[in-house]
Length: 216
Image 1 (tube, one colour):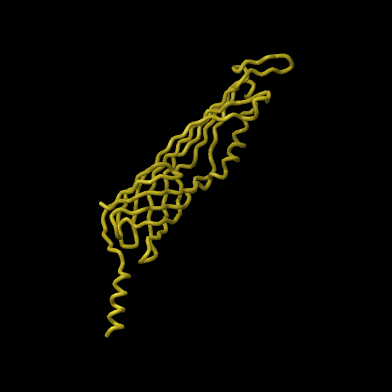
Image 2 (tube, rainbow, N blue to C red):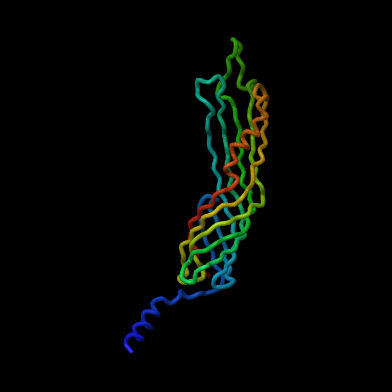
């Protein structure tokens, strides 16, 4: 009787965390911005969620060196904005590991405005900054972006408050760049294709989110 009793006691220690279906909310932050998700339980191994993310950043950078004949100062603005609809599958009974697939509605955008930092002297002729011209550009991405990833955290299993991790990427395709120049810089208006090429690595946008969920 003792071996059987010991087996029963050890079996109890490996009992599954209690599954409690319903709704949960999660706050998160990461490469998609700061966001909020709402989870709905479908089955012990399957949940769905919808959410939104937002982040703004603006800054300045200069092209070339101050000693260059023409140096352009760029003011740029980065907007990360998206909505998501995702489904989570938990392949293991005893672990919170999950596989995720779904779609993002992608509103990410990069805009920039460039102006000369100084007058330009060429063959003893001085051109004002206005005569040198300006550069204005915008990079938009495909609105519908499929997502695939993995993560950790089951909002309907165990404790009400859970740590959540998401790691994956969404496919936003190649950017569409609008590039407008004026003045002496006008011959550079064909550089939009070069910028699109430089932004190619963003075709697959990486997602890393950390957050907390709370079961309602």
